[in-house]
Image (cartoon, rainbow, N blue to C red; front, side, top):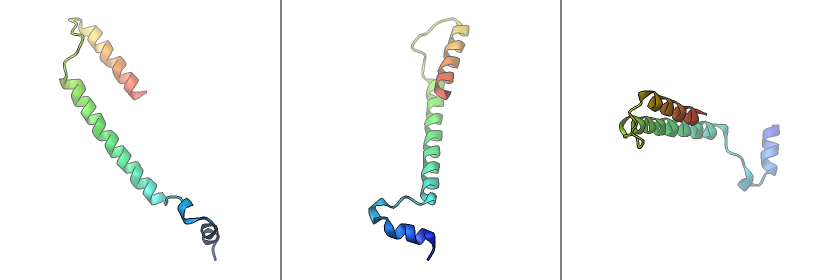
Length: 73
């Protein structure tokens, strides 16, 4: 008998941990969801009008840059 079998035989069935393959699958699902959400955020940022409509382009660029920095932090 291998050590893995001996350890698993002493653990109650309700306390068994997930297998690593399921963690990989969950990680991929989370990454896909984050990519889709990021795409939606980009589209919203691009096509929604600014609530503060200033004529100063430099201020608008700085505001967008700070929003992106906060999001990526």
